[in-house]
Length: 353
Image (cartoon, rainbow, N blue to C red):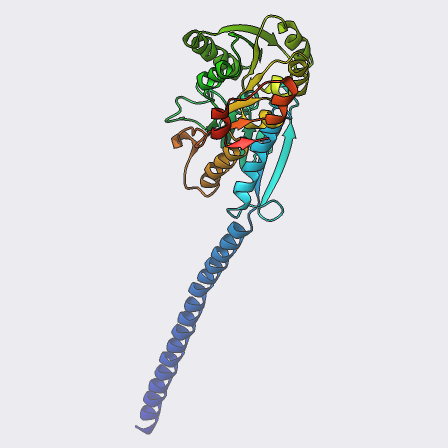
């Protein structure tokens, strides 16, 4: 009897030991499971932290493709840069600009655009029609902001100014051609106007067509002189002497890049020169009712900020026009060519030099 009871007690004791071991094992597994489930959360938190840090530390690479060097396009470029800087996108901090100039060569403009496309820039800023066309040809993926483009639709850059539809948007420098030509009649009794332009620039062809219609309405006669590069500008200007009573220089990049040669011809022959924008008045033109390219570039920069922040896409952003036009007069130039600016115009002038 005692041996049986002892045996039975031993079995019960072993059972308790086994149950205790199983319980301990379960607790240990639960602890491991618990620790295991916490580790991925910790990794996720680290990943999220790194993503936030990477977003904050991102440096935006912006390619600037400028077609040619002259005061207006330089001003537009600076306006663009200043707009970004004043809104938190600054060179050396979170922006890296790659600024290249085609110096009037369409082939170089395309090479620059292809370089930017291969480097997968975050955004391309194209200044003037040929650079804008080259950029659009090089990529359909990278956002392209344009400025100093007279007619984005005719240039094949957008479906419409209201809804571009692709990766291109920005600002147009379509100037008030008729109002500018009307200034000729206030400066001289002559009716013959010499217009210099690059026959290969789409933006210039658009302005020439507008000028032809405007001249008819204003009772003026246009004498056209076409060029293909800046080296031909002086000769073209001289070819018009004796045939005209005034020059009209639209916002043609090739002609404006050699504006000093036209100024020299105008001064030598006492011919007033109406130009297409304010910077050309500063640099020897007589008068214009027109654009401020610095402000146009700044306006484009404000559009670019929305794209960089992911607040808008070029396809849905309408092409914008210059918000404010000004009357610019160069009184110094008036004295050089011996012309008196009507007091009515002087009183209205926004800028005088």
